[in-house]
Image (cartoon, rainbow, N blue to C red; front, side, top):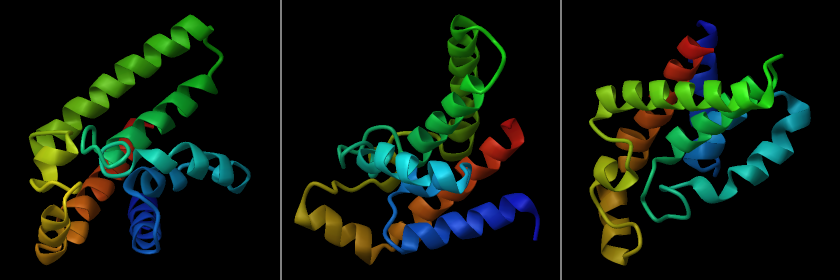
Amino acid sequence: MNKTETKIEKAIQNFENGFNCAQSVASVFINNEEEELILKTTMGFGAGMGQLQQTCGAVTGAYMILGIHHSNSKLSFSEQKKETALSIRSFQEKFIEKFDSDQCSNLIQCDLKTEQGQQEFKEKNMFHEVCGKCISEAIRILDDML
């Protein structure tokens, strides 16, 4: 198993054990000393940021990792911001190319703020069929970019 597939396996395991999608993606790109901070930082980004079903949590988790990656460079702060923005745009383009959207509501096509939507999410196994695939692809894209 290659490094990317190992990260995906760990992220999916984390997701199944209660991490949200942002936590699942971000957690496999940081070291153990950073884990508590990244889990706290990504806490509210699951299900499209606070379950608002906006930008997919796997995507926002990836954006945070891109920010961390570029902040560790020798570039000036201004250049780090520019590089991070360019990377985020590149990531988004690749993610949308794969899924036609980066919006949670478009990806899962049910309203998680309602009981009916939550039931539909469960019945259609979207936890694995959609969210797991978004997490996996976010990790693949990040690994290619980093």
